[in-house]
Image (cartoon, rainbow, N blue to C red; front, side, top):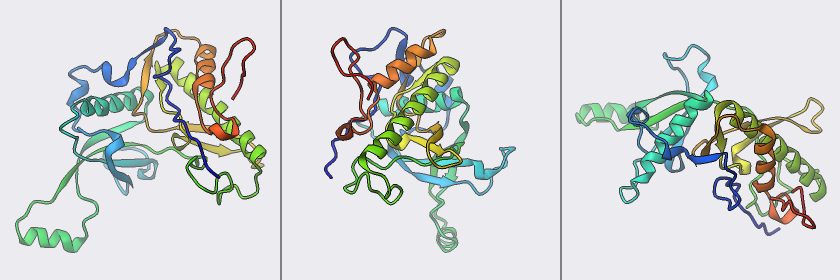
Length: 256
């Protein structure tokens, strides 16, 4: 099946409300830029599990480490993008640490060879964040969608109902965070929404939002219902089955 896909970007819509403020990277202080990372998450070198970390009181299994690549010198704004993401990770309580590590892809033999040659090992800039549980809906770009290996038993109408429920939960979570933390996740695509099913496996029960690289600051005191309505109207998952933004107007379509 051919898929028409639209990203779930919220901050770039034409009908931006007054409570939606500047992008994450547009409100940086000197202190925000003192973190020891310089590359954007969209150009990372991979996500790794954490085996041990002395600076964390919980289980290392609750953490993820993102290796960041070097920034593109032709695009200096990428630095602020990354600083903005770190600032928001702190704001929402998911940031743990940032710094440098030796290349985790090197084997013991590689390290021994490097030591013999007196060649310094490569060091990478990293950010450590809290792991989020759940699974995501299949990519809209999959040729076999929606009959992926995870949902072989669902018809198009059944999958649409599942996607609508996940979208609703994601917008409710985003609006709750917006009210309590004054940030709005700006990229609610299927890969950034991890959901868990109910005990009977019939309906989605909860969601976690990940990848805070894109989004906006939110005015203090904004109403949850306003954010929720804006999110539902502007978030897009699957255009070809109708799980897309609705046009809320007299005589127009509504919902998804």
